Image 1 (cartoon, rainbow, N blue to C red):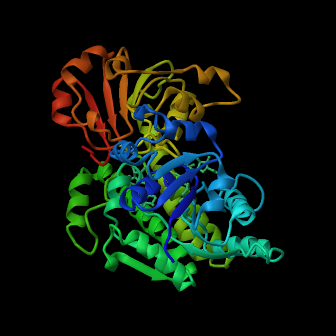
Image 2 (cartoon, helix red, strand yellow):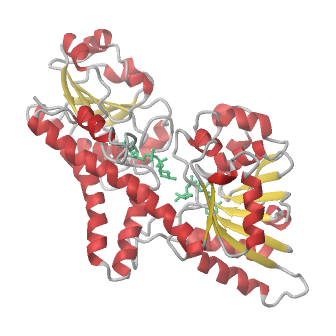
Length: 463
Ligand code: UDX
Ligand code: UDX
């Protein structure tokens, strides 16, 4: 089976970059990314590459190279499903906000909706691939919806194979992760369909990096990979507090621990807790699944990983208030970084949201600066529906100078490159004294800042 036309439903942080890399490496395949959101599609099609809806280093180059040739963006979902031999489902899978499993279970309505659309418009044999991270056994739901559509249409000769092919890319390094993946995981039952997908990846990925298994192991492996990564961050963040109490240095502890190759050095940076669209949602889902199977100890264990994440953020707010003479009411704070990590404009589950909301509730005024997040996005994230006054207690800064003017403190929340070499000589002059910097990412050169009169608090460093 040779794939000629691919359609991907969902032009988001996963679907967009993934399809761009497939198009770049498979010039003989036509790849179309479809989405229900016309504004998003218009931005993907904009001549001005600065308007791409997603900021991801290296993405603009690939779009410039492939768009209009074998990479297309469209809202015409039926048409492109009709002509596709392979459809990726890459829609968002949010946590349920109400009803059974609220706050933990994943809401599969978009996946279900996508399956129904595929069932309706697909033609001939279609391979349907789950790209989104989904709870184990979701492929069963997709299959049932697709199979129901084949029952009464013998003359159309519709048939489907369902595969799981979870994406492991991390935002900010998406293109590199897609071009040089640690592994490609494919789960399924239909060998022909599996081989067709393997062939696509083998255009740029070594065959020994492609691991094939059954549907359920593939779905579960993705959830568990995220759980293990998130657990490391919660572990190191508990130690950051211990370092602050004892005078040990978190970065040195992380380095010493990480030098044991069984533990490894990556993913041991202490900070304001993990954010992003995946970790909280996936660990909540793991807790939900474990409770569902009556494995309460397992559920409690993973719940603790989430609890430590919230505790780290709460702890930071409390220590900022404590250090600023017990009150931040009517004080001004510069917020440096709003994205959940550097090199992305994504703010989903960003620690900045919780921390800024709490600082506003304590009465502070915030100057918020992020090189890639828009004022409109911050406004959406910080909206207090029941307290209009708080909605006006922050402003968007276009530059570092703007952000630092007349503030009592600067709070670093994202590890953007430009925050790693702040010019304290000039910036400290713009601030009210005593001037604080609270560094939740451990990137400030403490001695240099102190030299210009700054009082410094840094995660994982005590005295
Ligand atoms: C999402 C999930 O968060 C993640 O768990 C999963 O692994 C991959 O999908 P992401 O690509 O970052 O990740 O989501 P998002 O940026 O929100 O993009 C999803 C897109 O799907 C949106 O543009 C949305 O408009 C579109 N969509 C959603 C549809 O086209 N049809 C739908 O029915 C629902
Ligand atoms: C993650 C997984 O890495 C990826 O494999 C999966 O497909 C989707 O979820 P992403 O959410 O884009 O990717 O970002 P990641 O780099 O994993 O960071 C997640 C959070 O952990 C960020 O808030 C980051 O700041 C935090 N983090 C990461 C730390 O606090 N310390 C670290 O050492 C690493």
